[in-house]
Image (cartoon, rainbow, N blue to C red; front, side):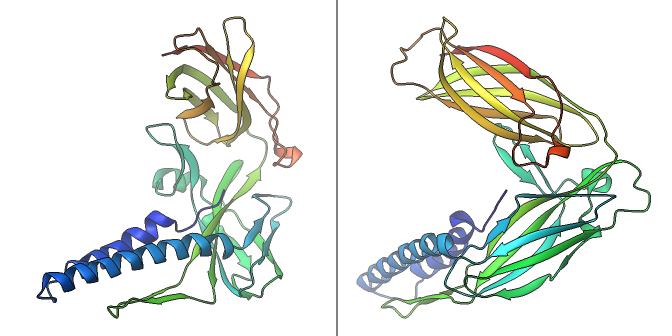
Length: 312
């Protein structure tokens, strides 16, 4: 999973500064005030455009998407590539976190669960070599990871997020007609899952309280996913929209990693030829198929199937 400092995070802070300048009382006449406000708004637009253009070009590549270490192999390898034309300053850090769903069912990464961290975090026991480096354009750096679990760790899974922070060795600068200067450095973060395993603990998933409703041109599906066990539950969800005859008329696929019980949301695009009020149902099928996970960590379970009618 990747995460960067996005438009909202950067622009909310930039706009606070711009707004305070725009409404400053330093200019006595209204014409000067309006002119300055216009210049500052134009500056904000330039900053946003620069961020959108720069963020797509200034990001290093990180592979693989997840690292799996165990008591037999405590070393892992991360490959950091620089496909840009600018040298990148890269820093590797570790932080406990896991993906879960908020009250609407949208997925996010929870970094502030201290109770779970006491039980599952290995963030303090992982090291990266090198931890900080300058990556020239077109080059790839091999980063070795090593983990030493706590002495009292007997069996189960522990995990952390590997946070790769990259900063291009250039900055964007703009000066408006009013003399206000913006000098920004874009710092992007990507998050990779790291797991440490010992033994083969069992894990189960129960899917209950499934509901589906039409919202504009989409079918919004919610499902309670109750996970039990000392490891995350990895799987693939196929959400199929069926008509009254049982024919599949739309389908969406999602990869899931369930760490804690949660209410997850899935979205299916409603076909244009569906009539309002038409009898429809959603079938959720969860299977162990995960091509992005090493085979020894793929779960072995029978498909989990749940259905629900669609409400309009």
